[in-house]
Length: 115
Length: 113
Image (cartoon, rainbow over all chains, first blue to last red; front, side, top):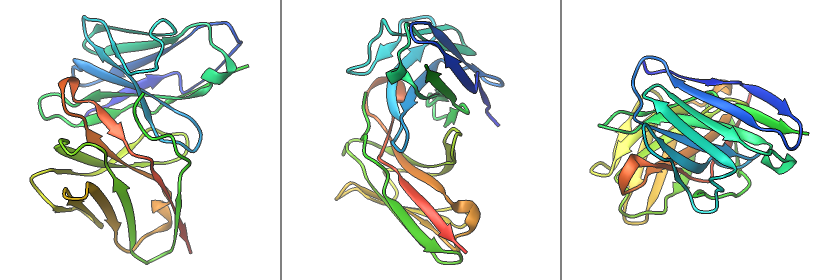
């Protein structure tokens, strides 16, 4: 079945630094990938939609200059949290699919801790 | 971003009982719904889906019911097992481009032996 690989699974970074999270579709091409953020004991909140070869579409209230998304190929999307602060600490999850009747496949998530 | 940022309600059940988890969705134009199970520290795991032209769909030990009149979705788990303990989310496919998936608030299911 479809597999989405997300790395790293955990990362701790210092405040003010940037962190890149990768999401790869291993056995299918993903024209569209979605990035979610999940705070403890809360639901998944859609941050942005990543489209191969074009600019990402951000949800209302999500800073596009802070959360940089790149979808340079049909199998790779990256999310870079720039100038991270402790309030950015969260669980970030990517998802691919939803196109052409295909289901959605989720990555395993990245736990970001900013200290 | 979209979604409801509420703290999760908890449903506690005894092992072997049936569980019913409810969800209210937001968009009457949504035409596709999915139930996910999420264990701690992991990504969501697909359980069952349903399209808006149906009102019931059954899987192995799970049944999803859709009531479009009141925009309500439920997940029924038969003979609940300790391994079913997790957080359950309903999600709706948003209308418009890109097929965005919007998640509901979620319910924590705690199964006691």
